[in-house]
Structure formats: structure tokens, C-alpha cells
Length: 403
Image 1 (tube, rainbow, N blue to C red):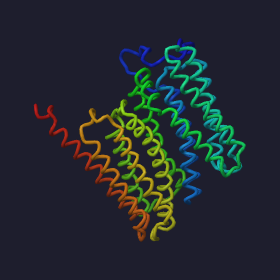
Image 2 (tube, rainbow, N blue to C red):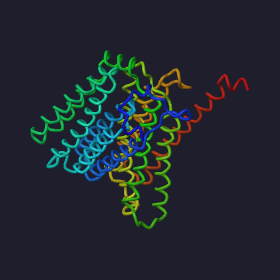
Image 3 (tube, helix red, strand yellow):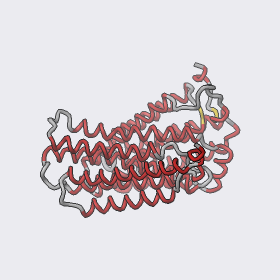
Image 4 (cartoon, rainbow, N blue to C red):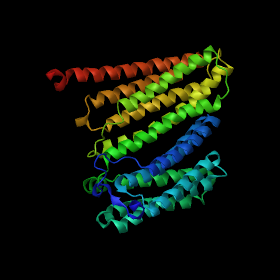
């Protein structure tokens, strides 16, 4: 209970339990679940608006929500805070996240102001967290002030956006986020931040990994929710097996091969590539869930018909974006801590992403099951290639040779 009355502390100043490393707290996990609930609503928006414009709006909303999640995540990574005031600020943030989630369907229309207010509420609470740290941890005041100023300017732009015409408000949202991103990635600021108040790398890996696994599980929610009560025939079972195989490959390529590897702290470009890669990762997983839901419905209603073009393109885009995300994340890893050439792996992921994108554009005369099967084969081969590379490295490692 003493934590309820302990102000924020820099994580390196905290003595954790001697038998364990620092782990994700219950409040952090609850916070992530609320965000994923909002991502589900954004996925539902995409499902109802499968046009080029709808996909663009989907990207804008997902970007806004992911960026707001990242602000609190970065704070919680640097500082250990679980006192009463911090919990109240987080609960207020959750209210803002819920407001954004409730506003998704009209975020570019009648509910745009409500969506913006939800975001502003989340960000104001983040600023107040840094204000508390400014007074409770004098050693990192310059660091805290940097985030207070950056987020405050972003908030001001969001407030101004409320008074703009509806069709341009979203542009102001992006301007605010671009300003914040540029403010926080200035070379001088980044160097000082890493040298003096570097992140808890293992905590960051765990936080991003947990968020990703929850989003990945959303694909099941999408399909089960839409197809509840369906009597499964041979076509539906076959599609289900194929779609699950794709889902397993997505899990494998990130969690078995990438998620636990440390990013390069001392390369600004690599650090940003690793971070932004996770935005595209979340984007791809939400889009994948929508695509599988739509394609499964096709197997129920039109199993012998050529797959609808929008659904075909969405599945191909989701998997291609996933591979782009993996390329960015792998590029951001610390080469000294990886058993293989990251550049080669990046090029493989980018190459396969182009191939899958091409298949989505030009392979048009197949059913939903047949088209998904082609994607499945490519992804299974990619997993097999990664397993082979890992096995080859183990075979050639000094430790193995010594045995």
C-alpha cells in the first residue's frame, strides 16, 4: 500500500523485487485493453467503409489513437508511478480513450469535436503526469519540461482544430502529431534523453509486445462475433484452417523471431524505425481481422464466386503492411545482438510484401478460399525460411561447434 503514497520515480532509482525484473503493471495492462477496445471500433469503421477514402480515414484515426497510447506508454516506461494521483490521471485518460472510441463512426463528421475532446483529455492527463514528475524528481526536470512543452503545443493545435471546418479538422490533427514527433526526435533532444534518462528497454519490449498480442487476438473477435451461430460446411472449415495458418505465421514472425530482440538505442534512425514499425504492425493486424471477417462471410454466402475485389485487396494490403512493419522493426534492432544479417532480412520482408501486393492487384479470378490459400503458402514459406536461418546460425555458432 505504500506505493499509493509514493510520487513518481525514475525507474533506475527503484529497487524491484530481488527475484524478478520489472514487469508490466495491472494498471498498464488495463490501459492497453481499453485502447484495443477502441481499435476494435476503428476496425468496425473500416468494415463499414471499405473504400479508398474509408481506408484513409481508418489510417488517420488509428494513427491518432496509437500516438496517444504511445505518449502514456513512454512516460510509464521512464517512471515508476502507481500512487493515488497517478491512478486518477490514468482513469481520466481511460475516459478520454472511451470518448474517442464512442466517436469513431462520426469522427470525420458530426462527432469530430467529441473525438477531438477525447484525445485532448488523454493528452492533458499526460502533461499533468510530467508536471508531477517535474516537482517530484528534480533531476529530470529538463526532460519533463521537454514533454510538457511538446504535448502542450500539440494540445493547442487540437483545440484550434475544433473551430475549423469539418473537412479540414483531421489535417490539423496530423499537423499536431507531426509537430510532436519532430519536437521529440530532434537529434540534440534525443541524445540528451538517451544519455541521461534512457528508456527501460526490456519494459518497452514487453509493453509493445503485450499490446501487439492483444491486437492480434482481435482477429478472432472479428470473425467469431460476425459469424456467431454459423453452421460450418466443408468450404467454411477449409477457409478457417487456411486463415488460422496465416494468423499463426503473423504470430510466429513477430513473437518468435523479433519481439524479444533489443532495439538500437544509439541510432536515432533505427530507434524511430523500430517505434514507427509498431504503428504499421497494429494497422496491419486490425485490417487483417476485418479482411478475414469479410472473406469468411464470402465463403458462407458466395463460396463458388470470385472474391469481392475490396476484400481481396484488403487482405493483401494487411499482410503487405505487416511485412513492411517487420522490415522497419528489424531494421531498428541492434545488429550486435542479432544472430543474422538484419539488412538481408529487411530486404526479404520488403520483397515478399511487394509480391503479395502484386498478387492482390492482379490475381483476381479466384474464390475467397483460393486467394487466401495463396497468401497462406507464401507466409508459411517465409516462416520456414526464418526457421532455417535460425537453425543454420545455431549449427554454425561457436557454442554449438564446441559441443
